[in-house]
Image (cartoon, rainbow, N blue to C red; front, side, top):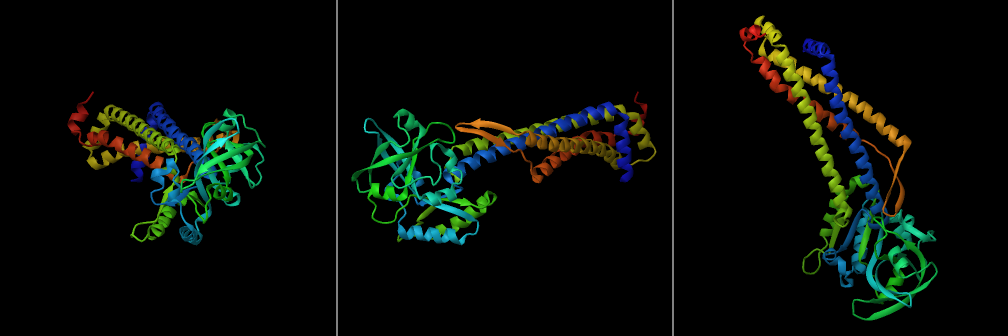
Length: 414
């Protein structure tokens, strides 16, 4: 076998220009795939981090049926005190959970005493919210960030602040209807103006949980959702399945589940963009396969055609068809190895250079976001395996043709 590799390598060196061009093409294909995977993966991870660490958390837990009617923010599907305690016990027992925040979601009318508009509000405990959403403070465009919110204060969305000309320190009134149908109003002071991840639009503001209970005249302990942050997002699916199993075991008097749990991607439109990135990565890999397959097949077919007399000679002296076939497959294998190794090395150097230079971009209201392209060992090994596998596959047909040649016919070839 070692001799076959030596002969295969010498044959590649006999046609230096062809070998160089083919291996260069494979190298460029490998570099394109690895660089795309690293940059797109970095962008995807960065944006998911922005969404989960400042808005949604990695997981959210609601009363069964809440998510289906979430647009109307139903207060009659809030979790009660006993249910909240049960969920808290389950979360505290799970070592993968880093923090969680209990929230009340409500709709209200927002008035600056001259004009009125609607607003969506997230009521929360600032301390718990900052632990579960460590990047929330960065979304505050104007106003004090420390401590997030005080009693009787509100963070309002930029869209409403601009449209109604509301400034920091202004007094406003919120009017909300509770689950019993009664209406109540309450005055708040504007603490800050908050922007959205995806742009200046949006009507979501923040108040303290105790202020929401006062506004909605809640007698007991009620929440709409629990946003959960994990210590390591790579464990999202295992933790999700574990929590789902434990929460599903809690039944109501009718024997039906009380809770529902969802991962961030089931509730965020950005998950569609993330899926598109994955789809583009898949098609880039398909293009790489096509480049390697066509390149190797072309080289090996030409190699067989130019060496028909040589094939006839070695066949005439008793070389078995299997060894002839192995010789040409080995040449394709070595071409794949050469192009892949050079491509991987150049890609790693390029990724290191991109990190050294630093690539920043703006996305919506987020400015100066810094990409940190990385490539995992698994991705590198996958691309290497694909390229080498396709290189061998592309060599099979020409190699089989060479092995099946009749020695007499081959020797007569001019």
